[in-house]
Image 1 (tube, one colour):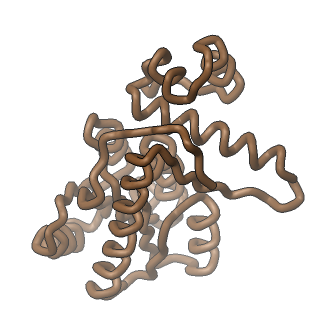
Image 2 (cartoon, rainbow, N blue to C red):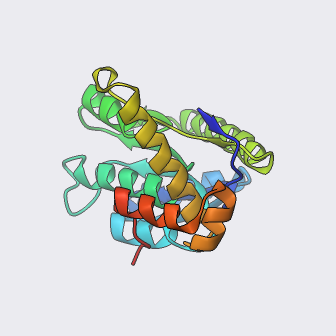
Length: 212
């Protein structure tokens, strides 16, 4: 689904946030991806990753291990970070890694908006291939943004109908504009072609607030 409204935000298709709590694996992947020409920032947990995602220059790609402390034996921390990443950086391409229940993890991660899914231990070649695909998609979407289009990712249950899907698109487009403008309401209104009063209405409707 596309919108003709221009929504720009500072992110780079070669900037990867790597979230992996195993320091040996994290160092190995960071070094390999850096050698391949990517800018990599590694963090070991959800809290530190959120700090990177909330920075002025946010990553365009996220390589995420779903099993993170303090609940490394479950997917809860990783999935929570996946949700937060897509809210803080709309359009980020998330590649998830997991060694847990593969089918359940894949279904849940993709349902929540992950771009790709790899089972640990994934080969270095498979990881590089997934990152290249994600980077290519990110670059293409950035060109679309410059042309005044925004590609939205929607996950909707078929029985909920078009109204719910439309609301999801509405909220996602508003989130993108808010992030792109640093929550400048006047600029959001200008980009989306609506009165500021309408922007405030939608902020209240979807419960959107500037991140603390």
